[in-house]
Amino acid sequence: MSNATPATPAGNGQSTKVTDLEIKDAQLIFNSAWEDIEVECGRENLRFPKEIILLGGAPGSGKGTNTAFIARTRGLTCPPIVMSALLDSPEAKRLKDAGNMVGDREVVGLLLRELLKPVYRDGVILDGFPRTQVQVECLKLLVGKMHLLRREFYDTPLSIHFRQPTVHIMVLFVDEKESVARQLKRGQETRAHNEEVKRTGIGQPREDRPTDHDEALARRRYRVFKEQTWDALQSLKEIFHYHFIDAQGTFAEVEQNILNELQYQSTLELDPRTHDRLRSIPVASEIIIHARQELVKRLDSYELEHNELFAKVTAFIEGKVMPIVLKHAISGVALINTEHPLLDDALALAMLIDVFSERGYHAVVDIHRIEVPEKFDLKTGLIACRFKKVFRIQIRFQGSEIRRG
Image 1: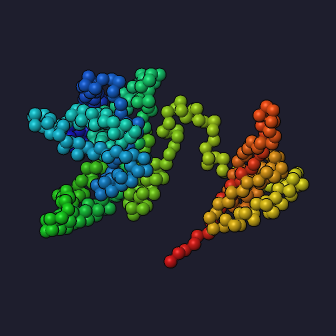
Image 2 (image 1 turned 120 degrees about the vertical axis):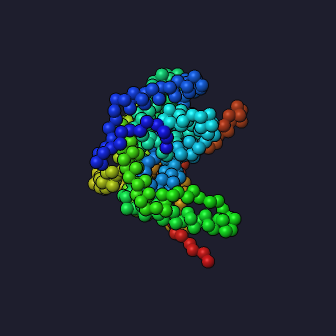
Image 3 (image 1 turned 180 degrees about the horizontal axis):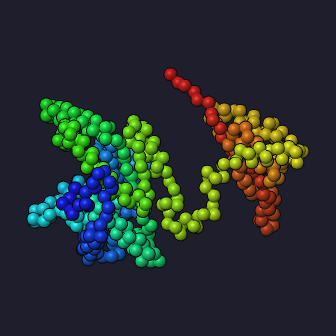
């Protein structure tokens, strides 16, 4: 991706180790790029994405295919930042035209400026970074700066622009055999597509990579990924949220694997202070764990401890409510208004809701107090009113579907 000083190549299949020199190089590279953008933009405008998803994957693992799905899963509407495309951007071209080498420093500078664009404020998928150990160290330094900015602006009116950063490492993985097979298949499909475009003049030609037509080159490309990008991403495993996605299966299977990995987790995504504020409120999944057992326990207690009241409630449901519900069997929604004094008892209301829950309905009761004129004083013109309490019962259930045609 760049002409940066590479990490020392791994030998005998062993992982690359970060040397002190590489760390020092990264610090020099990052600090130089950071100072430039801070002078250029102003510290209060260094507003980076709340969420960064670093997307890596073996050749043929489906990064391009699955990027849009990952974005939808995370609610991101902005396009991904693809480093190979960024290095072909007008900004990168200007550097090249000026005789500059696009090394790690230039790559980091281009990326920092891109990340500051408002379209990425809520989150972005970053494809193709980091790919070297120097870039790994630069990423760590960037996240450190983001945390520093958050602390600096925490108690200021600008705090909403410097939220707790969330960084995900997402690796789509296929083995060497599958990767080579997919690369060669892609090459065949690309060549056939481009020939059809040339013949008909319809459509746009696709990028045709030489490695997609040569098994030895496809295999070498996979091994370069394992030796460089794989090691770079693995070195971040203990620092950021890491997601290993088995991409060997069908599209549907891979999408399900992605969904399983990217489920919302408040502890990972909320600011710690926000999370602490909400901690005392139970999440829905917790309160429903024993809901069935608790419902059974309550219904049995109604029968055993409040037999008379329970009998009145079930008689009311059977005689007054169910005839109306039965008339709405098609729609699955029944609305009943009643002033029955039985429901003045809070326990009776609880019984009514529980009975419907046990029978497979969803019952909601609203209490409305309506002012009703009762007397009119001719001398003073004052109207005396009484309040009428109306219970509005809404019953929902699975209605009957009618096929037409």
